[in-house]
Length: 210
Length: 210
DNA sequence: TCATTTTCTGACCGCACGGCCAAAAATTAG
DNA sequence: CTAATTTTTGGCCGTGCGGTCAGAAAATGA
Image (cartoon, rainbow over all chains, first blue to last red; front, side):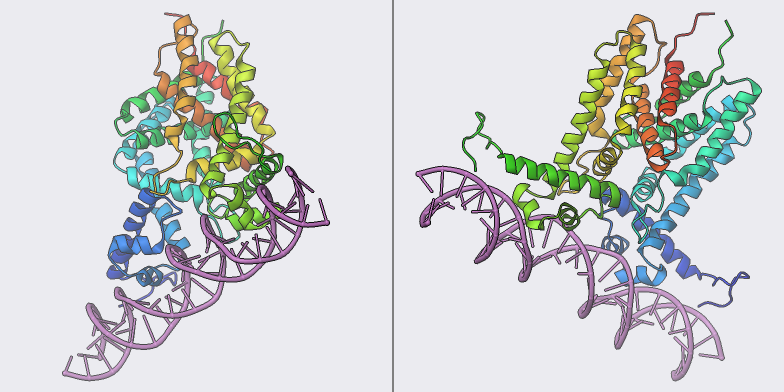
């Protein structure tokens, strides 16, 4: 039972409530990854969790809030994981390669979660029909990647190129690495990641002047 | 009214029927691109076309056939356009650059169609729930790109690398170029395409041995 | 012109959706 | 132990879906 509010006025969630929300989110992830966004109904999610549909409505303001909660959690995981690994890299090339290899490493253990994330990311829409996420929501990721590329250009490691185009292509290539591996589990994810790191290393390399 | 059958037994479609199917497909494209796959109902498509919903059922075996028809037509357009432009390229690098620049050129005049194609490509599922398209359906495109890369390696233009990874990344980078430009109409698509061509030119370049 | 065929209308059907809610069950506080 | 509160159940609601179909309208052939 709720004892006290958080200092910011938000109600402190009880242990039961937090546990239930986590359970529902886990089931939502499984169902979305397996059935796709369009078929992932509250009935299916509730059935997977072994609860009544009304429990979801009780713990979440609506289906949209549930979907956004999934995105928040899964995305935060990736970012936290990647940032921790990149902290001790000093060169732009080191950062670049570590980002690709780290994300691949994270992918291996979170295939279902990332599939669900992608499904929601590409399909969730606001009540007015406009996309809730989509490529505009990748702006923060693009800026992070751009900073790596800019650093490399400033230190002389990298050649001159459009860092926005490089960031967009980088992000897309990492996504497609996951998509391909998801569809072909026998595909060597680590080898793909190393090849991809090589690809961008060559793509950015400053060549000796003639 | 149907006069005679095609030699292969298929009924020859009357002019009226072909015109009506084309009209329905055009409306389907507009609605899918605007509202997204999930909201693109037969009612919405019919309304956009100014006809009754039953007309769609009369001319198409079902919603799935309509969606697949859209994919067939839009995809065939891209392939035809790209192949025509690549026919007179002799070097692997020429083929590589032409593919990227040609697809960008095609994109500029077909934003809506390509948005609809992508929506269906990522969302259409079979009755049993498995994806109808998805990355497995890109196998043909991957093979085409791989052939360019293999040619470049054989002629000595390109360095040694995994052509599958390069093809996957190539395809994804082109897709993200479209996605980004779709979301940011002020983005210079041609400049992006040239930068992307440069990116893959550098990524594949064989460097002089030390 | 009339008969036949094609094309279309618009209502209906069963199904599924997200959300709501009265009441039961479970938990907690006193 | 009882009262209060939280959590859950399971049915109901309005809405919208894809598909069907009787009959009307339009087009075509004789």
